[in-house]
Length: 265
Image (tube, rainbow, N blue to C red; front, side, top):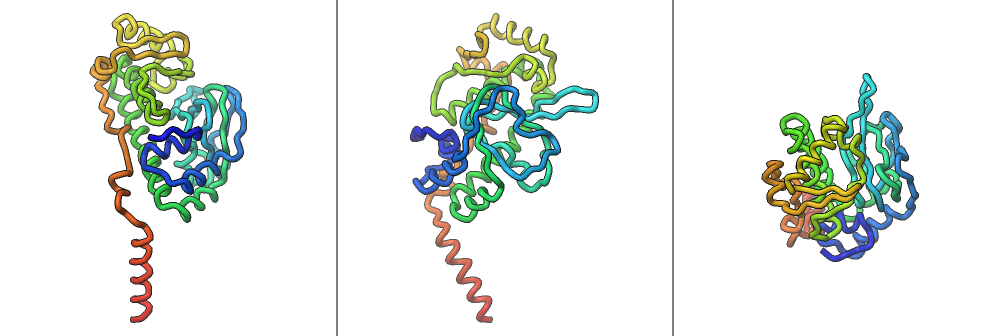
């Protein structure tokens, strides 16, 4: 994948080869960057849902507060992600979103996505693929919460993040920055902060992963995958085979011919 300074272009470029005009359309989504500090709430649950945002830099997370005051972290967003896709058809936010570290967010209205639908078949297809992937990520998170041990939960999540970063940043490194506190990880994985700390220590003592403050290193990915029962099928997706040789103009011509035929009857 060709390197690009735009996180969202790199993200979309993982799924399919992008033309210059498609890259330009995506860069328009990053045309109004806003610097945001760690802890900044991008929006709250039940706020009006009228726009999306892309992460140009930094990590964020979606969360819900329960009636008893507990917090559930639902999803973690990385640079290049579009936040708010699931709320496109809703008038209110379904979860709050907060920055996990200092970063840059770019907000854009729902109408901008309609412009992409109108002007690019390829980008529309990729957006559908990204929305599908977000759904699969939530499904995997549910399995992680309900059926895996603490060791598997933590190992599985770290492997997932590592692979997502490799795909968007085009690196093969098994070392990455993890700007999530033990409290955040606990609320994401359904554990206590103490349990998260002990699990990190146990995995480190066995040489499966190492953490130095916010830096995580996976020395043997194969061994950690076996520990986590990690199957990366849900992270591997490409539109290239589907789009290869497909000409949407030809499809549009068929639709127009069918319309003219119907009108002549």
